Length: 210
Image (cartoon, rainbow, N blue to C red):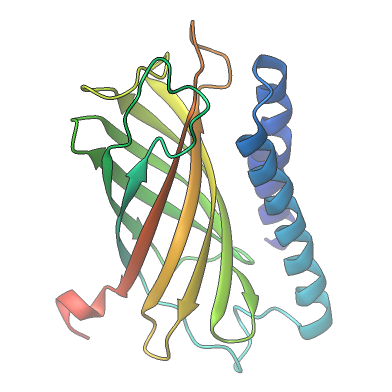
């Protein structure tokens, strides 16, 4: 199971960026995948040294999470000539507690106040530094509708990113996330977009009871 998780994460976070670099040299994208690769390496080392943290009795048992985020879309002024705006961004994600090594799936939806929407799903890895600090690289694939926001060149868009979160003893997480969305050159244009959000991830028991 662990080896399958490694293969999936490497494919999503290492192989895919190589394809994107052929289409567009993007500093934000490159920074994300290189940081993600470093975090995954740290997770592998920590796993070997301390044992499997997810299944260890010393680590808290994770629960399904409902994540709510608010932030800004189009935060890097690299392509402002074609879209000179930074809309408000709103996000919702469901993060099941199914883990394969440190990786788990997620589904999400985000929208801006200008009417753009993005429905997506992917895989996230939780790399732990102690019991509270969690750094989570992720990769996702989804369907984008521009609304009155930026034309990203193609409905099918890839999202990569990293979240830094603090996990409280009851499972609640508070964090900040940075993401890059682009189509890896499969569209006629590929301007890409960068976004940042403040996230709160609530154990599902907050809403449905134990």
